[in-house]
Image 1 (cartoon, rainbow, N blue to C red):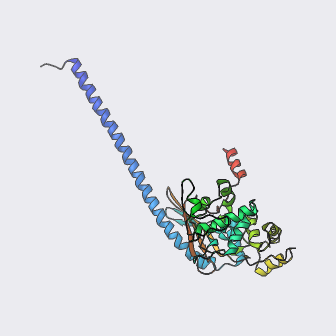
Image 2 (tube, rainbow, N blue to C red):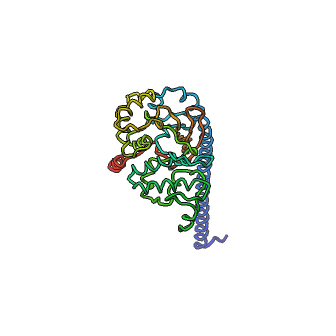
Image 3 (cartoon, one colour):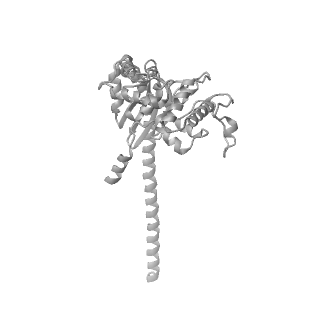
Length: 346
């Protein structure tokens, strides 16, 4: 019997090894695809479940504001909003956390034009006073406030220093005014006369809510870093800078548990040297609320931000944002010193 030559046996061995190597590579590739598909399926299911829980959390927030939150005394509401401690609801595969913040601590950019098209002059002037406290000249602040009105109103009658379609169509690229309420504070960047440097100045102090809605500022929950919002609201017929001492007095004389009534606020204002100050824009009730909802399901996380107006009566959802970068006053503001500390720790 003839045997295969030695070189033929080597060829067969090499061919066998080559086939086995190819099959092993294919098997490894298939296993990687299977593992990726399994992870993808798990993530899709987790994010889908997180979305469902986020929808449910929105309904829970409405019920919470109508019942538990509404039953709290003004002092208790202020303490809850100042603490910024989230309400955590455990779930089988994660948790839902809700953080509340008083939405009266920022200026509602949509307050300058109402749903019926009216243009409340006081809201426009208050925005101009905020701009002046941020360092803008009076004429620049007035022009910017008029541009904000022109951006939202339905007509093409340009206000003094404002801007309508004729101005924006000459931009590169050209665009038109929205002729409706702002979808978010970041839309302020589209206004004529607004640049990135000014936007960074305004960003911590502005927000969006219902058209024509300028909620009374809750003096009990407002913090010292928002004093320009309080001063602009108090100023009335005087300059905003003249109202700053009164705003400082309200925060300085605020009882540890907060003011119990508007009468206490008026007593502090009466003690100031400026007789024209008014308490019509300040109080102790919570009218508007920001709620940040974070839902966690396994590896998935969803973040939504809501604004509810009319909290003291019937909460009305007037803003909904997705993600941690939704433009509203941050629930938790990180200072530069905090950032430097984190860098040093690394």
